[in-house]
Image 1 (cartoon, rainbow, N blue to C red):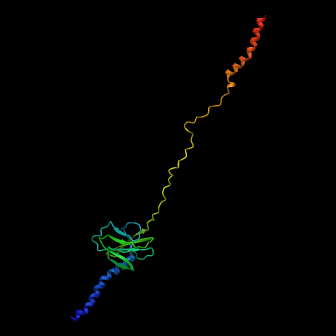
Image 2 (cartoon, rainbow, N blue to C red):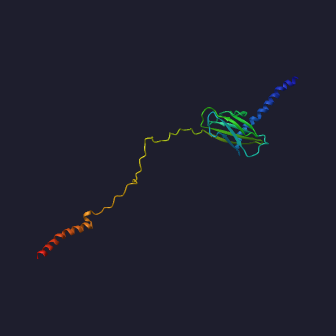
Image 3 (tube, helix red, strand yellow):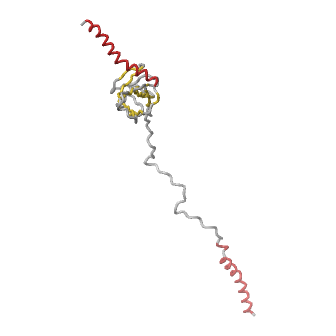
Amino acid sequence: MAALLLLAPLLLLRTVAGETQPEVEVCLRLWNATEGNFSVETTPDTYQANTTYVVTIKDGRNHSNSSGHYLLQALSPQNTSVGRWPAAPTESCSSLDTAVLKIPENRTLWASPVSSLSSVQIRVYLILPGNTTEFQTFLLNRGAESTKLPPSTTLPSSATVPPNSTVPPNSTVPPESTLPPSTTPSSVCRAQSGSLLPAALLLLTGTLLS
């Protein structure tokens, strides 16, 4: 009985060490990660403070029979942990909050902090048996701030648009310049007949007197 009491703390220490050792090994494997053949998406896809995001990992390979894990981190531009992972268990790797998903889980939630940040990097590691570690990242940039456009400029009701500079439809082209009436052929004939009349009267008077 006394032997069992002495062994109990050792068994408890071994159990705790057996539980924590894989976590330490997993964190160490992150340093040797290579770029993976999977992708990371978030909804929404731009950074907003105090917002819950859906983080989805897309991998065309079949890992359903694998005992691997996905490790997820959210980092500020200063490489510090930001936000929370409310839907997944978390561990601490190099003082970074790390969410842990067991394959085939590929989706979880991340809640952004209330502070405004220029960007947040979602980093995802794929841990597979056989010392295979891959990673991918997704950058959440801050969305463009909405700006109010000025109201469209409209003319007041009393304002009128000036008419186009065109010739009015009832306007006519002035007639071509013509000779004055005194220079027409008919007026010339009347002038000539007026000068011959006295000569004809004198001729007629002379004939009668003779």
